[in-house]
Image 1 (cartoon, rainbow, N blue to C red):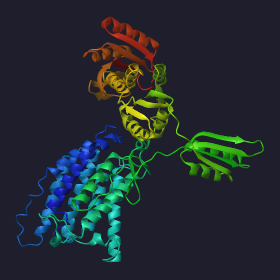
Image 2 (image 1 turned 90 degrees about the vertical axis):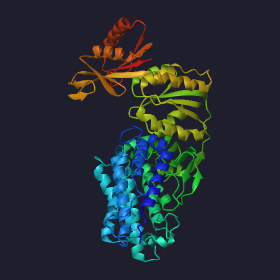
Image 3 (image 1 turned 30 degrees about the vertical axis):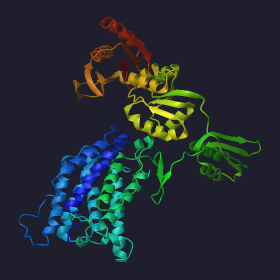
Image 4 (image 1 turned 135 degrees about the horizontal axis):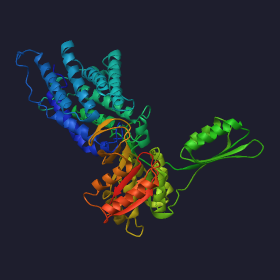
Length: 581
């Protein structure tokens, strides 16, 4: 009896995976902030899938030394095809996510080979459970620093779910729960005209759906998620890609894949959510409630605990005592129930009142919000009319949402001022749009790009034209900086020693200088090679004012056609940052 994982099924699977990854690549790239925010996980997964799809699967023939009448010959083709698929995936794997995906196919190939030797006609559910277990183990070894809450957790959950359903079916017999997964494919019931292993028992489709649903649920859980993902408010990009690939297997086996997985943490996507039954329902922003209640005679120490708890649930927290031991509690929050429960933890609240607050009306038409780490650059942005969200440490999605709302504007342009903050910014922008606030994110990758965009902001101009002008100004600003080498290292500009000055542009070391003054001038000369009209300097917190004055003098002498502006940026990482416009 033929294996359900015959070459035709494998071909349908890898082609469907490539098609679905093509459709989801942009979103997977967007949420890629872990382990490095390089926004290429979707692309890496797609390239790996395409490499696997290049393997010759459908044309595989039985082994040359296997007799035509040998029943075991039918078991050879799936093993050979899966091995070819795995080999092509491993050779073409891109990035950590591609490596993990390749191990999924390798796990399948090894399981099919072991099953053929162990027991021909192994049920589809057992085959998939074994394949996923092997894949999870192989992937954990392939990744140098495995972390929970990532693609590895998603793969483990899929393997455990299928194994549990198979065990349940074996324990309860042919009519019990999970019995479908213990059946073998019946070639006499194929509905695929090419004999592709699609059978009316639906054993493989059912097993694949169990795996995909478990993977989807594990992806949505926030427990153990790396802090980079928590701050950005998104799920693991590699895990999302694995769910897409498992959904492709469900479809290839003739099943009905579940709803598209959400890319956001603990919340549904911006336009819809998924119920426990998999039904799509509209997503509506939570209202803000005013919660008040009376606490008679609470313990003073417990009040501080209550204050901290309420501060974590909302704002406008107030605990007003009456002088006789009683306290009136007040908070604005989206979590009315937990706010009352916090009071129950310290006393017996009475007079509980919960009222929905009306949405705050906008107080102005437009605003520009910049995320800036340093105090000096933040002061420059505020002086130029911008709103500033302090980005040290990097803000969470909720903090970005609060900052956008705090502008009081109907139309907000957000400048993240760092490449790695792009995802958290775009996620917040998507969510707040459903509150009637029009948000545009301009992908400024540095503070100087953000300040350049703010400098051309004109509230009197049409909003779309203003956004275009700001985006062009940001894109036209080249940035670089000076750093002090902390150890011996080999750079693109040659070997460096501790204390030497490294000139950095576009993320690469482009020069090594003996001191800051020389390094600043060399870096400016290099950055001005393509041309430029204005050089802006931000001095770091440890840089003396004399450094900026000397640099401006030297540059005006060597480039009299260029304007030079020096500010105290007070950044802690780079003694000097340069921008050329």
